[in-house]
Length: 357
Image 1 (tube, rainbow, N blue to C red):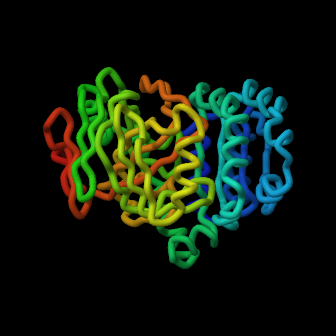
Image 2 (tube, helix red, strand yellow; image 1 turned 90 degrees about the vertical axis):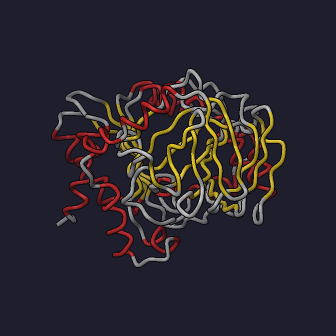
């Protein structure tokens, strides 16, 4: 019998996050270790009278691809994937990593090259506005978090199995402040960063796109970021870990990037394309059930009392215009010192909001 928490999570994904309807064509992507959750989702999709398309990812295939694919293969556009992306009504993606370091030794140029080719497919799915990605607890994730699997399962389901309609209402106040705001300033140790958000609309993250969820984000105006920031936690992208990231911005662009570990990879990603050196997102974590960093961005960017800034692609629904094959979230923890100001007024200090969520 499936863990009742898995059944509850499947119900949230199918009936709340993407609201599957009779007749929908639904793409269900999952990794092998996420089979239990995928199977529960599959049952619910069928009960809804929808039509699931299954895409199961097996261990070792991604590594084998990048290790052996030629440049011609990396640059080959996957036409069938685009046809499916255009046809589907909804998409559920279940991450369940068996080895979070699988791609560590792969040439980052190969990963960047492939992301550029498949970017248009991702854009088609995002524009449909009916997709969700979820992280399923596995031994690999538990190891990265330095927990037992049982501990990580408790941690994960505490973050996911919430009343998301109630959580959505809590986010309204923060969204309203950002919607009206013109200038953001982030002040903290080794950090003094400003950017404009004038004319942009904040997006509530209330369980419809990520699971776990719990943030409100907005797209900075592309050419306005000034100052510097040192991120608290390692920034992880494509299985590569970069620690001690320090970025300096001028006229919206990164003009200096350093790191204590993985600096070459950091610079490689920043130079990926015209938009990868600019900010595409400023997000504020509001899931106070997530209290610690576990090296999984879907959890970490939601930590209550933190903010994150993403290099690269901006989500267009809030007015963001930055385009890039890269979207790399990096986290600053403000709980032990730091504040966020909007138009000169402190809205959060030491990880606590100046108003009630």
